[in-house]
Length: 126
Image (cartoon, rainbow, N blue to C red; front, side, top):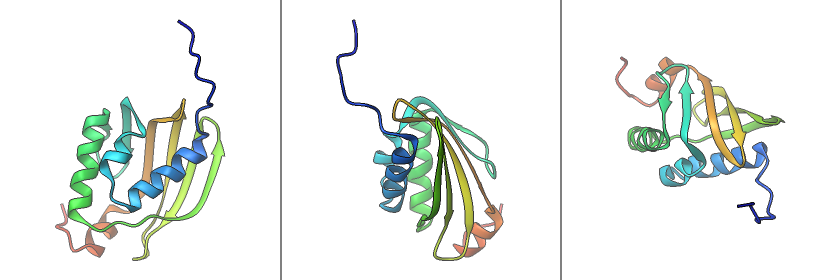
C-alpha cells in the first residue's frame, strides 16, 4: 500500500534542533522518540548503545547523574548528516554527528572529554 502522507520528513538540522530542545529539558522520553528502533548512539568515550530502549535508559541515567545543558555553537547539514558543535555552561565542548533518515536518528556519534565531564560534575572517575 502506498504512503499517502504528503508531509515531508524534517531535515536533519531540524531533528538536531529538536534533539537539543529535548536534551536541555532532560526529556528522555522525547529524545528516545527521535531515534529509530534499531538506532545506535556511540559517544566515543563510552561503548555504543544500541536500540531505542537502551538509548532511552542511557538518557535517564545521565539526566539523573548530572545537570547537562547543550549550548549550540553551530549546526551544519550535509544530508543525511547533521553536525552539532556545542559547549556547556561549565566550559566543556564537543561535537556530535547525527545520521538522519526519514526524520529520525539512525546513528549518532559524539566526541567530548569524559574525564573533564566527570570532574566538572563531581562524579566518580572510572
